[in-house]
Length: 297
Image (cartoon, rainbow, N blue to C red; front, side, top):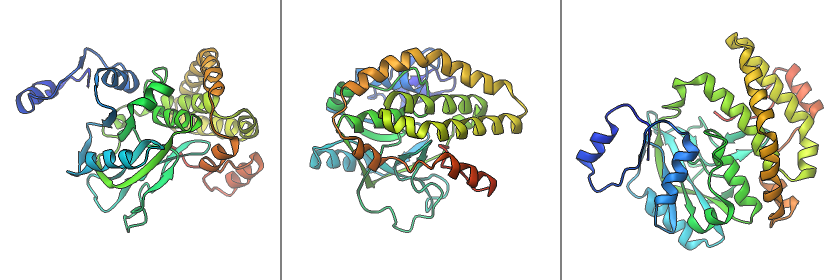
């Protein structure tokens, strides 16, 4: 998938890898739509996604396919992503979800602490594999997200529908973290702050949502306000919540459809998400100048 590139990507691919089918979009239509078009065009029973800012170990794809073949209850698999420039440092060992999404192991020195397969919340879509049957069941990436947190959203829908996510430590990828998004920090922040609200609003079981909502909204507003003050751009805060308000009706429609087909108990969702600190705990942490929770980077 070429999502409106303006460099020599297409001529390079055509000259060096003529056997590769390229679908070229005339402009950047967002990660979600581009990937969805690619998935619709693919023919295999498994769908592997790989960002263009990566280098893979030669056995990366074989290890992911093997994991799906050996674990029929698994719907998606996460790779072990290492820093491209510092290859003894972990970039991502699977995704987690509390108030925000976060990356397991991010920034840690790789000492073998993530060398065992394990079930986890979700997979970074920059280097992951999915069963086609699962995607046909739960739906593709939500194009209203455009980019950021779309993989957390899909992972949550998968878990609600009874599909597990497996971390495959032998599926190694070297990742140039935020090679593209570092060029658009303001837009990235807006998408991230907007989309994490959509993740919870669409997917979180009602009692969990009501319980976490006061603390989540407090943290969200503080993070948004703090960023806008730091960047001296208070208008960004208005843009975030205006975009959220416009999308709430459509997100509630999606929520009804998702919640009607939940196949796992609430206690299971509690076991794979969180922890969700209380509002009082967040206030105490704030005054102690400790981070209130992981933020997706």
